[in-house]
Length: 192
Image (cartoon, helix red, strand yellow):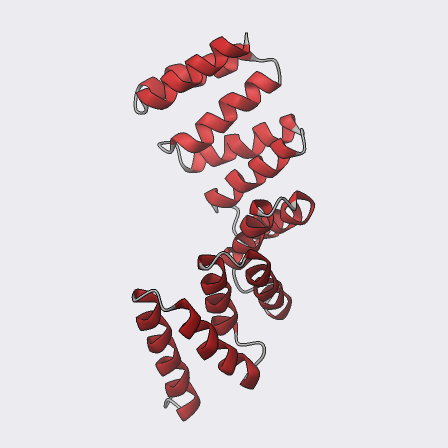
């Protein structure tokens, strides 16, 4: 299939964005993508890239708006889009909005370990510890050598009054993350 001038234009846009981001020219990227979105308001690449630039500048609310537009226009395109939206919503403290978006990401890609972790964090913040434990357990199955899921899972077990489960995790972590294991031991000791 021959390339069109529209395809070449989008390719050039991507090159410009990548080059500008390499030099931390986020404001330029915002102007460039704003122009593109004025021409094509549902351009998935432009929406995602502008959301990224906004997030890098600390404009989470605007990044969330761009990602909401992207997932509304392309709801089944990418689990990563839903994850990014939920991640920013969780960072803003909007756990009620983040939870269904993490779940949507997982519906599209059940092996997206980051979404299981994010869902676990959101559920912890809602004091839904049993559900959080299940989400974090799935995260650790998908990323067994990452200490983050294990750490949070141990903390959930403490909150659920299951210190023996937390101690099993500590013993497991000692094999590959002794510093995290030691930190958990201190926290469990302080928790009683």
